Length: 78
Image (tube, rainbow, N blue to C red):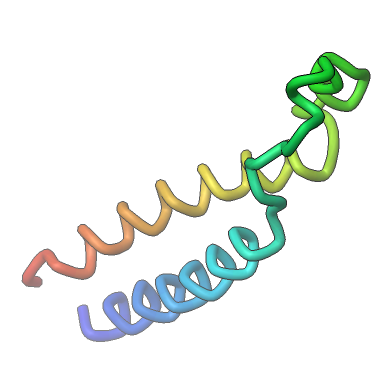
């Protein structure tokens, strides 16, 4: 059981570092004056899920769920 806890801890640390990097790579949500002029309806605004920003958002969600699961598993007393 000690080996399993060490492996889960290592995965948790890697997930924490990866989650931090992915969150810092994302752009800010403030769109400035572009939303007033209707620029959010552009091609990039409509297809954001297929861009790099969309991939980062999906990766953040997956890593956040993994973070929560690993945190719960680490707090279970073996």
